[in-house]
Amino acid sequence: MSDRKQNNKKNFASLTIFDKTYNFPIYNSIEGEPVIDISKLHSEAGVFTYDPGFTSTASCESKITFIDGNRGILRYRGYDIEELAQKSDFIEVVNLLIYGDLPNKNQLKKYKRLISRHTLLHEQIINFFQGFRRDAHPMAMMVGVMGALSSFYQDSLDINDAHQRQEATRRIVAKSSTIGAMAYKYSIGQSFVSPKNDLTFSENFLHMCFSNTAEDYKVSPVLAKAMDTIFILHADHEQNASTSTVRLAGSSGANPFACIAAGVSSLWGPAHGGANQAALEMLEEIGSSKNISKYLKKAKNKKDNFKLMGFGHRVYKNYDPRAKILKNICQKVLNHVGIKNDPILKLAVNLEKIALKDKYFIEKKLYPNVDFYSGIILRAMGFPPEMFTVIFAIARTAGWTAHWTEMIEDPIQKIGRPRQLYSGNKALKYGIKRSKKNTR
Image 1 (cartoon, rainbow, N blue to C red):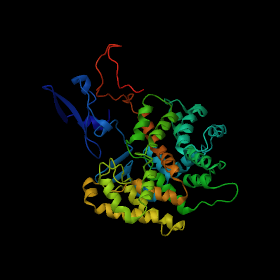
Image 2 (cartoon, helix red, strand yellow):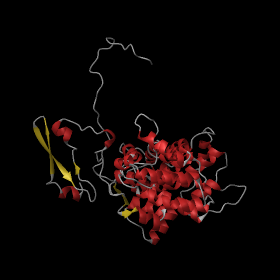
Image 3 (cartoon, rainbow, N blue to C red):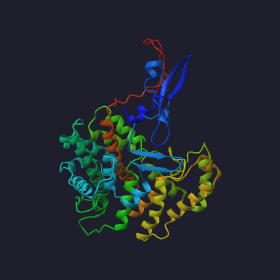
Image 4 (spheres, rainbow, N blue to C red):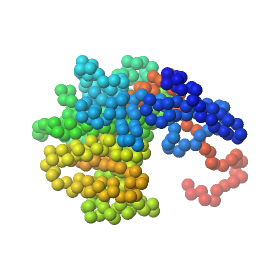
């Protein structure tokens, strides 16, 4: 039990159930809302809470990331995301998330060397890729290969060994970019490109994606900085769906590669990591600024299936701080690659202006999120929409491994086991009742 919990034992919430009152301790967060500890609710009162989507449930205690959705704040280990995006690089942020503080120059140099020595994949993994169809989605390859790493690197599977845990996290972060680049190359029918460890993490990823044997490729500093910023902004986001998936998988004692593969699977959903691809496809569907009014009406109509992707967030009820950063980077990238008057960017800017003045979106607090501009940037850099979520996954390995490590080292960690509100049949006798509507 943390010191914070011990210091707040005198604060209680009283809950009356069937005329009997129970007291549950209230713990104050360092920042953010306090929480009520209901871990003994079932044992004392014989009831469970019902919270679909865990909208009011804290599943763990964590020191990694803080979000204040009302004020539009995102911090990694206490550092504002705006400052990290400006002054840091991705591997330093990885080190910060996993170890808890910023490394000094020597520590960072050593850590970058430790990461870079794991960029290569086992040669037999190339054969693993050959098993995928040529038109397989890059995320399908990402899920499969990430999970398969456990069969290639069996010297880092013991979750009770601190050294093996550290080795596993370094391998996952380093190899994720190589796997992602290989998935891209395989999807476009080009040969794989080996990593170059004299490049930075982001430079190396761009090199593996866009260089080939036919011509030289020089990594642009502008694009490398944009790529690094995207990686930093997507590195972690508290207890989101994929991070919670990693923690839940890890709570069973599963090996780290399997846990991260589970996180990649969760991230693939269009409501999570796939939202940036969906946002770009939405802008392409709208097509022109003259159609904005029409599509805003569709978005407000509950009977219409159209959704305004890239707006609104489960946590943020203010402007997503990551979106502000990407909005500034977006124009720099477009100018650099020679797209001065990109119609999609123009449409996005106009859509943002109009939506933010619309009474409906103001009342619903639907502000642009990180997905709104990231897709435009990645498209301008040369990535197809199918790669957007892969890039998200590469970045999020930082947060996933940090949360997995924190969970393993938590002395009160238990296997995740949510309960349910059962609404099925009561006890039936076999053969007495047969459904006439059975269509299986």
